[in-house]
Length: 130
Image 1 (cartoon, rainbow, N blue to C red):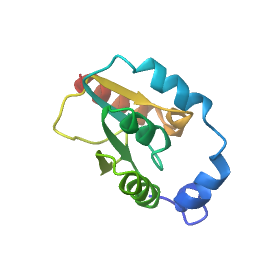
Image 2 (image 1 turned 135 degrees about the horizontal axis):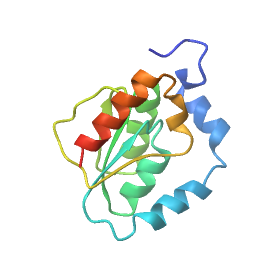
Image 3 (image 1 turned 60 degrees about the horizontal axis):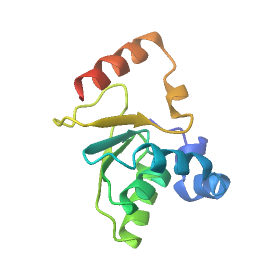
Image 4 (image 1 turned 90 degrees about the horizontal axis):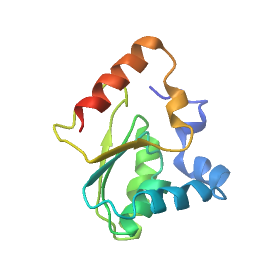
């Protein structure tokens, strides 16, 4: 659950604070340029990387715990007329009933996994996704 004082309570504020961050987007665009399969971004936030990959023609799904961040992601993808599957969920405990060719956690989002228990769950889930 997202705390009302959390940075992640408002996708527009989050984007305003991180608008200048683009170097990692270029990294993922280059990293996945030859990928033709299904991509899953965990902890996708407002879709900064997810939308860039979708815009480049990738088949991508985004998952995030924060519904307010996903609301901003959905607005972005709609405005850009992008086909992205957005899901609300915890990257340490979810099931999309689908296999993916690439699963990644962008930027520093993996640092939101704070316990050994959650990290073990995260490891089990990501292994099952391939």
